[in-house]
Structures are given as structure tokens and as C-alpha cells.
Length: 153
Image (cartoon, rainbow, N blue to C red; front, side):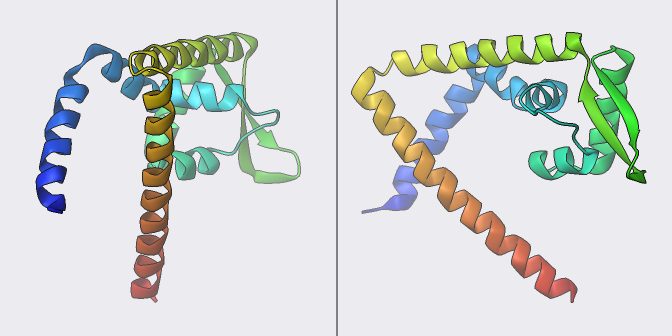
């Protein structure tokens, strides 16, 4: 099998999908302030900015910019950790929590709508295959991080 030819076809299809409105809305929701709000809404405790940075794979400066914006909108609060004054703890305000839950529902509905277009069997198969690809990507990312760490030593 010529995987390069198949990969080219996949890239073309992904390009078309990336231009589609529902996909853009989902992509936007998976990044930036929306992601931070939704992540915090599902935590039962305070979160460190470094945890958000690591989870999103972005710099601490980008996280700080998002948190500054969310704080100005009164969607989060920051407090000094009483056990370690060097750490800042992030929590959602009640308004921020409500917004996070609302946004999560919107994203869930968009995904469900897209999957429903496939029908049950294809939707299940797509999710199964996406899971396999995610596992592969995760392993590759972990391997790359280990290589980078070894090179820095």
C-alpha cells in the first residue's frame, strides 16, 4: 500500500474540513481562554498556571496573558497559596464556572452533530481510529520530549 498517496488524500480532506465553520468553532474552543475556562470548570480544586501551560503545551507567558484577560473579565480569581507563597492558585468565579459549563455543552453538541452525520457505525469507528491516532501521537510526543531532555544533558 502507498501510504504517502493515502496521506496526501487525508491532508486534502483535512484542509477542506479545517475551512468548515463547525470545525473552526470547535478548534477555537479547544484553544485559548475558552479552553482554560472549560478546564477550570471541571476541576474541583484550584489550579496552578504551570498545570495549564503543560496541559495546553503553551508557554507560561501565553497562559499568563489568557489569565490576565480572564481576570479582567471577572471570570477567574488568583490567590497566593497559603502553604507556598511562591505559588499562585487559579479558580473560577461563579460566572466563569457557568460560562465554562455552557461552552462545554456547545462544543459537545457540535461534536455530536458532526458525528451524527456519519451514522452510528461510522461514528464509532471514527472515534476508535481517532483514539489510536491520539495514542500514537502521544507516544511520539513523549519520545520527542525524552530525546530533547537527553540532548540538553
